[in-house]
Length: 129
Image (cartoon, rainbow, N blue to C red; front, side, top):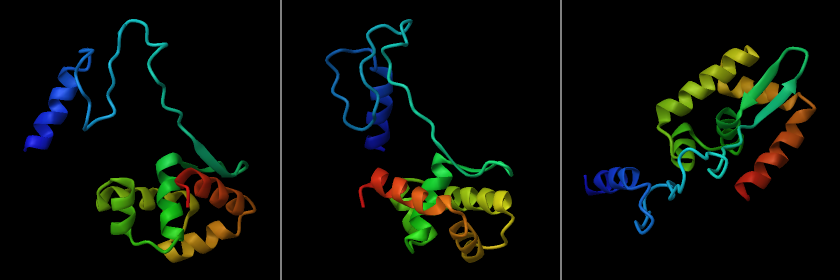
């Protein structure tokens, strides 16, 4: 419970210059109205087939990368700091997009795309493996 109180305090004190931030990525924001100085999150997507509009969001791509490395859903969840149910949800969405019944056939299907090798190298660079 102490951890969550500390996280709550960091959000409450996000405008305090001298407050030490240990548990969150929240940083001091000098001017709330001037959001140009605030860091922006770049959302990526990985397009496998432009004609059929088959793409993966960043989180879906993260899940596929770790699963293709032979990790289980639980290990993938730990690696991505998600719950196993969330990883299962992402996988379900990916299977529906690519019309595949299970994880094994999904991974085999993804390997048939020319973009898959480039995708894996991009993900390797991102995770530093």
